[in-house]
Image (cartoon, rainbow, N blue to C red; front, top):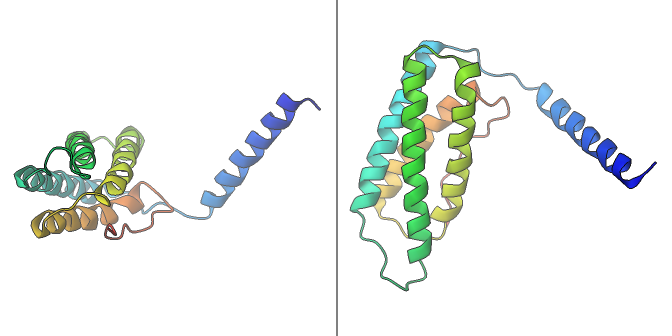
Length: 156
């Protein structure tokens, strides 16, 4: 067996194992009204987080946090836009199949933002808004991810 064949077999095996690992879990039964309501709440809470974050004084130039702050600001903006798009799609009646790519994209941004948030000081009001967003996201996730693990507060 050539090296490329071994790599192909290994890749297929990994894919089968990954598929088998998630096959045991089930998505929450799709409830269009509930998912739409949660997505709307998520969009509103994300907007409130964004507004509060932008009111926070940015770190001084050259500070250890300035780059992380700017990266986090960009990610919050992208999350806000994706949350709004997901909410709008669900309000138009789109279901799981049509909206899962938007959810997946949003979750990638959320994970990246959580990494950045570990390095940036934030005020209590920003932390409270982030807690509200996290709570709604934890309610929404089981409809999209059968292996959803509730997000915990960011540890600094």
